[in-house]
Length: 155
Ligand SMILES: Cc1cc2nc3c(=O)[nH]c(=O)nc-3n(C[C@H](O)[C@H](O)[C@H](O)COP(=O)(O)O)c2cc1C
Image (cartoon, rainbow, N blue to C red; front, side, top):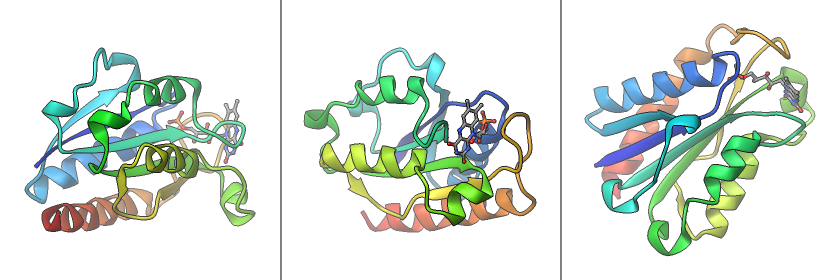
């Protein structure tokens, strides 16, 4: 199975999680291409079996670039294909259950009749700006990708 992992990132936190997910998927026997959202030119569902999408949470939602990218995910092509979504958020945002980029991405992809394999991953950052992934979040991303690979193998 081959997937595409697309992320947006200003300070490297979401990129680090995306890289970890791709590495771990590969270790788990999956093929996966990694793209910054700024580098994806065209997206063909024929090339991929699954999609993983990640964004920093900004103003309680996904980044503008990820929202734009979602417009390229055509329901008629991606319908029934598996997906997972992740984001980076501040701890207070998660505790209070405030708007999450990953939850909003998942909602949009479910609306396109895609198949959500796992609950979203919310990786914790401690600062609004800069690289500040909380300790343990890389390990949690690895665990998430291992679980994702198990689910993908059952597809
Ligand atoms: C303009 C702006 C708005 C933000 N809004 C939120 C927010 O609503 N909730 C939250 O948890 N974090 C918010 N953050 C913090 C981001 O989640 C943090 O910058 C992001 O996780 C960093 O990811 P990156 O390194 O991949 O860019 C905001 C950051 C910026 C710069």
